[in-house]
Length: 201
Image (cartoon, rainbow, N blue to C red; front, top):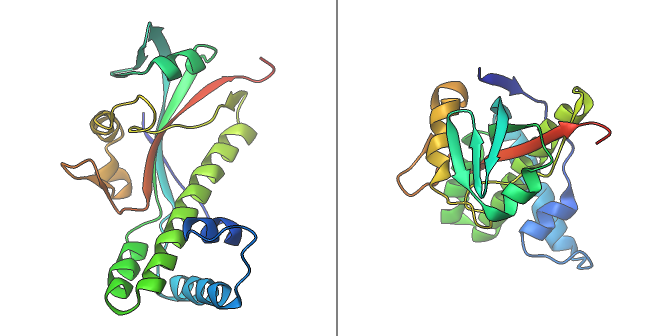
């Protein structure tokens, strides 16, 4: 069964936004902070944020480097070892919606600096949404989630995206589509796997 959730937005982590903009943590330029704050205000006023997640829970079977999650599987020596201690895994897809893409496209023509800021805001927003979901799992379950990981990361094939989209029916459930190049639309979206083990283990 595929479940769908929608979350309220967390407060902005401005340090993370600056990091995504390529600004080091000890760099304190008022003009950069003003630009970030202006773009956050535009984002708040002109964008409807969906903050939607669809997910499903699977029993976990590991055979060598093959990892089976219900009807889907992928290969990863690294994560086969990490998931060996888990009883189950959750596969999820998350998106903040198309609004941020429209702002990035609009301002890429008139203000590259603002377009960069919107890119950073979108990246921070989707990571914040994923963190919210994983915190929700941790707080409302007898299982403890491990660190999430995504297709295309480390030794996991990016082609695994197709299986995730098929099993979660992402387009129908949260309006998330997958291009032939494996890029997602809306762009500020994530697919990921979270191993879970019983608390206390």
